[in-house]
Image (cartoon, rainbow, N blue to C red):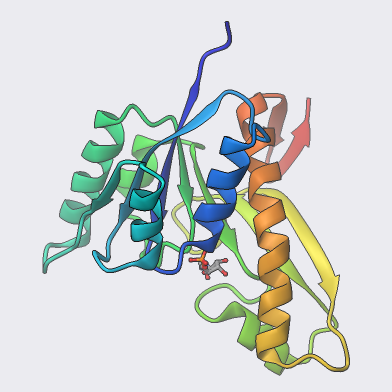
Length: 203
Ligand code: GAR
């Protein structure tokens, strides 16, 4: 019997990427995986309520004025308690401290709504739209100690249409995000890859 992979999801808001992952897990599109815990730094995040509604373990771990390293240590402790082996950031709007990243080496994924390395940081879709890009997209990457920087697992691209505004473009990028995250998790959990420098490729 193959071992179950235990996912930990971190989110700060709406949680549509979390919901897409949860739907994929429930439908068997991510084989041998379960969501062990969903954690938010915001107690009122709609994504956290969605996790509770699905009868998943949903924890609010707020910073409450604590230093980043201390807050992160509490999150790492919760992830370990739930024996998480892959952490998925899904709209988690806080930088991770080095000790968090070192606690899960090449085991933290993030999704970002641009074709990195273009438009890291906040509001990437608006930045990209205002810049006048013609091809938009999203990136799933491993998290390292630089913002929106780690090894890229996959990207999905879409053309910007003449009729787009920043909102319609964001919505179409989001559709791609939902497809991309499931695919990226599947690839990583398969273990059938090598990382050479910055290159992630099938083994
Ligand atoms: C998503 O578009 C995600 O790519 C982005 O936040 C949104 C969260 O939406 N993340 C970042 O910008 C990280 N730098 P969701 O809560 O509906 O998944």
